[in-house]
Image (cartoon, rainbow, N blue to C red; front, side):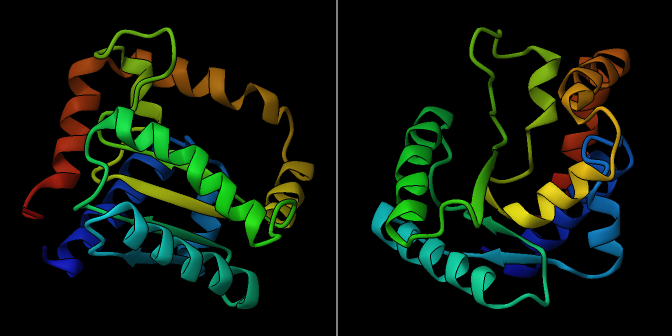
Length: 183
């Protein structure tokens, strides 16, 4: 695994998909201000990933020089169902560390699939990323951003409409372009 290539493909995804398609209206400011931490773990087991997640959660809670962390784990949980099952464990760690209400975890995966959708449904691309990753967010920052943005409840539906408008072939190509050269 080339850590720098993993970070670069993830950064490209943030720029080309998340920001350029405006899937998250709050991401541009944080990327421009270099307040997104891109952390790569070479974890090969659930225990190793939990330790890496614990380190990153504590780091985010203790260090306000960045707003959010993308914990990228290319060697672990490549199967979406395994990844999805792990999310409960990850949320449990937030509780064990007494960080509930302070931090939360959002999910992105190359095979992301919303419940009730077909595997190739274009709407899944709103949460598809080049690598499996856990997105660690400060709840206070999220609340502040939401307070200053109109109709945040409409964002998920607007995102679905946006990617549907682009079409499946375009979204596949866009994600693939972020994955070029990172193998």
